[in-house]
Amino acid sequence: MYWEKDVETIDRKNLEELQLSRLKDTIAHAGNSYYYGKTYKEKGIQADLIKSLSDIQKIPFTTKDDLRENWPYGFISVNKDELVRMHSSSGTTGRATVIFHTANDLAVWTNLLARCMYMAGMRKSDVFQNMMTYGLFTGGLGFHYGAEKIGAMVIPAGAGNSKRQIQLMMDFATTVVHVIPSYALHLSTVFAELNLDPRKDTNVKIAFVGAEPHTEKMRRKIEDIYGYKAFNSYGLSEMNGPGVAFECPRQDGLHIWEDSFLVEIIDPETLQPVADGAEGELVMTTLQREGMPILRYRTKDLTRIIPEPCPCGRTHRRIERIKGRTDDMLILKGVNIFPMQIEKRLMDIPGVGTNFLIILDRQEFNDSMTVKVEVSKEYFSGDLKQLEMLRKKIIEELKSEILITPKVDLVGLDILPKGEGKAVRVIDNRKD
Image 1 (cartoon, rainbow, N blue to C red):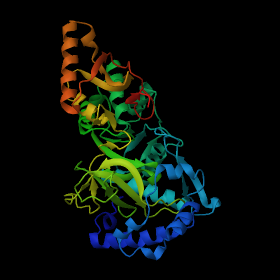
Image 2 (cartoon, rainbow, N blue to C red; image 1 turned 90 degrees about the vertical axis):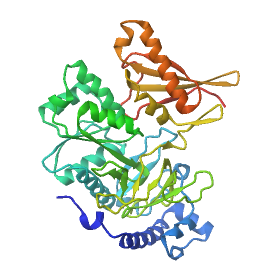
Image 3 (cartoon, rainbow, N blue to C red; image 1 turned 60 degrees about the vertical axis):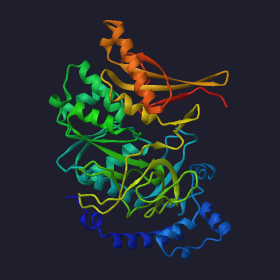
């Protein structure tokens, strides 16, 4: 059993009292770091400033730039000899950031992952195949230790090597997988090449998908292909990694574990809090971190608090699946566009494959967008009129979503670049 009923269904009043107690301790402890010690002195901040949860607004925001500028040890709040692990962000939007953990930090993180996986249906009797990158990336190791905490047998397969992944699933009767959504779709094409049906030829019943934003359309497409339940996972290295928030069996928003994180949603322009239910930028504060507590971290992720209680009985509030990131937003001819808008439309079109790439160019001050889309091979082996009709259909669908007419290039399956980590969705060739 890994059902922490007393924690997961705690009364909201008691949960908020627990949060306030841990917030006060966290703010006091964070002052031991170089960065927060200096910030407190400059801003006249003292730990007893916090009388209620709303008083968190008296603390300045922390940004990724702050973490980078205080590389490498400016945020640690313990002696270095108490640190037992370092992890790093992917660095996809600039220089990577590093996060340090004590032994207790790792135990708390492991416990959160076990809570998530058990909530989604994983049990001691399961065989768990971890298809994520191990190493500095937090995804692989986080889920690995969470699965072992539950007592499941773990296959640390790592990323890539698709035929070997499939062989492992079949030989060892894998029942649960952890996979990046774009790779899950790619893997389905390898099943087809091998004349295998993942629904009939494997025993997988649950997938944990995360590490990159994805739409509900993509999730449902994955579920339709494989016949398993795919649960959305949210995390970021600055807040431990995966396990910050997770879907319960209802798959309607992600429960964010509020005994470990204090959540705010702010307007990214005014930096003021928004009402529950309104979309904004997610801001988070660690409540149980010893080695490197972080206060009011601006995640850049866009979401909203779902104000209604979840019928599953858990009292920890839910966030909506991440819409995108404020720094992923593309501005083309004055229009704000998120890559997930493109994905959402493409996933609805029959014949479209599992990968796409947005390319932005500028010529004589005129910006343009080209969307390269993988489509089924039969479109290249028959009447080319069908190919042109599909191309026009994609243009119409995208125009209705983003209000701009993109150029669309259709390519065969597995033509566009793929990596073992997050999918590359945008290449911006424009020069400022």
